[in-house]
Picture (cartoon, rainbow, N blue to C red):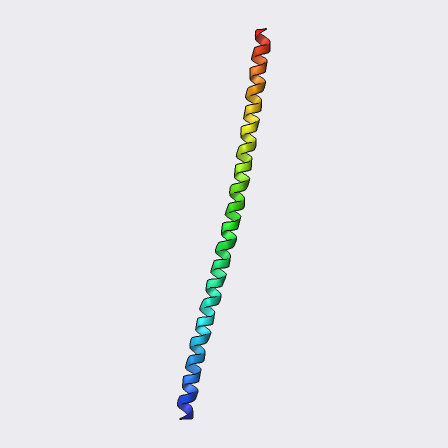
Length: 74
């Protein structure tokens, strides 16, 4: 009787430990995904700023060229 009770207790304890381990693993995976998503969002924001800066520089260069052409035509 005690052997059966002890065996049942150990079996339940192993199931619980496995369950807890799976939960910790899922939490770690979720945490990694969250970090990955945050990094990707940061990269996207940086790329957008770089594109915006390049567009502004291109517009400034085009405007300067336009002014130079107008000045040369005078």
